[in-house]
Length: 282
Image (cartoon, rainbow, N blue to C red; front, side, top):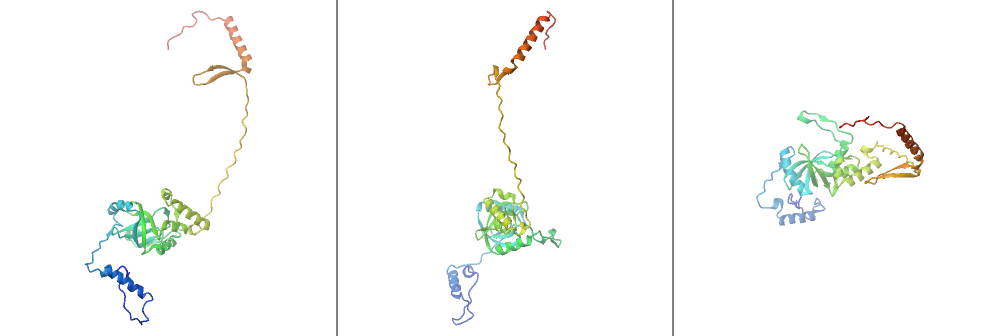
């Protein structure tokens, strides 16, 4: 606070026991702030900061989306935590307030106000309060970094939140307070998420306390039987251009010869009569 010019140091006498143990450090920080003309040490007129609240304006949110996507990692301050995976952020660079949803996970919801302003509350889901408490403890009123991927139809930005270079989505999954959502499959953090989930399952943490691994059915080994080959002599009759062979088994030769003799005898004993058959077109 002192180094940024947001506060001044109370002066004490050299022999005053009420003086802070880091008094000299505070004086040094104040001297640097005065030299750099930071905060209240700046003699210029204090600028008016206008903050755009786009958390409930879908139109404005759509306008900000391309800038946040192109910006990559962006600094932000967590103003409010609504649930384990839903926070309200202030982005100094854009001087705006947004609602931010953690990507890649399904997080149980905590108790929340009923919609429509009618009063009352909606009951939370199992381990929703624990997820809320963890997120509050990690990020509330702290500086974080975000990566915006997309936006839902309500104007809420969806992406990844990092606190001290740790992915909050991964931390929640690691503690068994969230599960990996299928949309994470295309993310660069998918392997981290699945590894965290496997670890939480093995330890049976929170939402995985009663989880029972499905037994994988052992596939019956297919018995491979040897192919039986029965070679038979054959007389090739025709070979087509496509390489297809037509033939007759040699063992069927006597039967074929007998059939030809029968046809010949039938033809000789009952020759066809001339004009008995008149072919017709069609």
